[in-house]
Image (cartoon, rainbow, N blue to C red; front, side, top):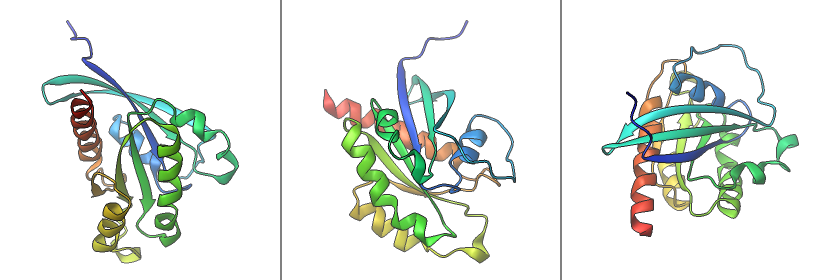
Length: 177
C-alpha cells in the first residue's frame, strides 16, 4: 500500500531557451536523454514522488518555455510555486546574464519561493565559458540558496538538484511556522 504524500510542492524550471530544462526534467522522471532540441511551447508538466527528510513529497514540476514569445504568460505559471530551479547553459554566457531577469519574474509572482541556480551541460567541458567560481559569485549575489552543475546527458547531479531544492524548501517552510 502506497503512503500518501506528506507534502506537495510546485516546482518551476526556468531559464533561457535550450539551456536543458526539459532534458533535466526528463532525466529526473526516469526518461531518456534526447539529443534533438524541441522548444517547449508554454509549459510541460512532470511529477515525481521523493522521500526527503522522512517525508513523502509529491513534486509537480512545471517546465516553462524559455523563448521570449512566452514571457507574457509566464507569471501565471509561477503563481503558487514553492521552489524554482533557475538554469543556465555553461557553454552560453548570455544565458547566465539572464538569470537575474528570470529570478525577478519568479520573485515577483511566487510567494517566497526557494530558488537554486543550476549550471547545465557540465559534460561539455571543452566548450565551457563560465567557471564555477563566477557562477557561485552570481548565486550568492542574487541570494539563491545553492549552486549545482548538472549534465542531463550524463545524468549527473540531476537527482541531487531536485533533492537539494526539496530539502531547502522544507527548511524554508519550517522557518515560516
